[in-house]
Image 1 (cartoon, helix red, strand yellow):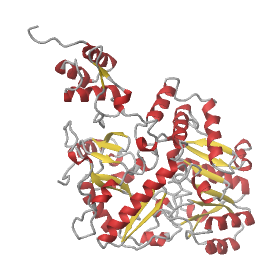
Image 2 (image 1 turned 45 degrees about the vertical axis):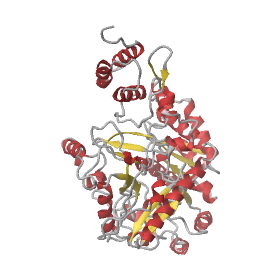
Image 3 (image 1 turned 90 degrees about the vertical axis):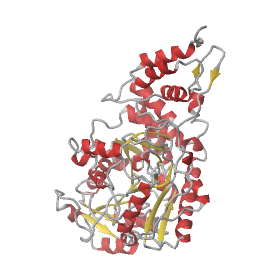
Image 4 (image 1 turned 135 degrees about the vertical axis):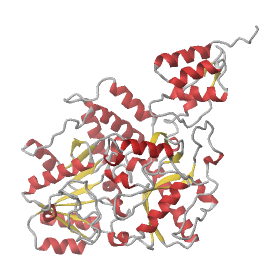
Length: 544
């Protein structure tokens, strides 16, 4: 049955509205329909909301969670570092060791600057290119997103306004005077514009337009932009906040073979923790030693760089990106087939594990195509898919950053300790607007999230039951049955497994009521030790 309400999420949202603007941490989430959904934890590719519903996570936290949730290597690295300190305010070995790995992955790069978010890194890049060239203006492209700062938030979602208008109340109006927005993929337009200008410092672009349709560059376009920048002394900046460490280990630089002057990284680089980086030629990034200010209390702190080191180690596994490509291609092909079978006009674009869908158009090859998609119909479809408790999938609505929809059910009733038999869907839903629900073909139920860590690195993601065992009698070492946990993020893995064993009566020697009370309270190490000690004592039969 479709989900009709999320009472716990609604209650959390109502409470949050008393302390948070809109009840959310970022204002765009306040417009989520029917209301924001609140989650309590995740494991691998699975997210669990506070109402007890499970979802396959295709959004990956808007990109950072390239390894999924709770990746063992990432968790171990962060735990090991945090006991030594979160930040030092001084140098440490991870600063240069992780930088060396990134320089090895991205051809032609010579230096790294650490920062914290993509918006910060893009601002730093803008300051550097202005200092390097002595010019203030720059070129960007329609639909490309380089953060929400005043200088950059131009031409991303122009609506009915001109392509070069500012997009936020309170934004400095003169921002649009310095940021010149051109049509994506049109090399002739770029050359024509630059022919009469001598005040342009740089060209900023997403090498794949991920924020507005997942549109690949036309053949020869990146090479042409590189040539034009060289001829006119402009700095070429690739914003690889999304594509970096995702469509290839070396991002778009590796995939397309065009070397920019500066690369901006964020999202996937630390596997979910807050980290961004500028990679670039020494003659540009070394300007920070010659009067260009680049600062930040948290820049390159050891906690996030420990996470980055673990993430890079995971993504360096042989075949990792081939598997991401295969899964993304399989998902896109299945969506195209289902949409075609039911006569729905739609476009599905895919590059690596990044997939995006647009209704109402047969193809999305440029930003204008993306703006013509049926955004109202798609918004209605998202709500219906959400009600059916299906897994989340990255899409765009053309007016705001991409929304989410969920494709098939892995839902568990609130309070239930047993996973539904629909852990693999019986039928997913995909509906044309106004046409009622339609069924995905049975073979498409095998589609998997863009990343499932235990499939990508089976040797490094052991089953929970193999990592943690509950002992009963001295000669009885039984494995707890594997289960995706329902505990919150603060519940440690051994306690989750022990709780599961208590509920199902499969851990020998555990006193049910006493053990359940101790573990269920989860008040800290004392209670967990008490439960384990109880588990190790043989039970006496009553009357013995």
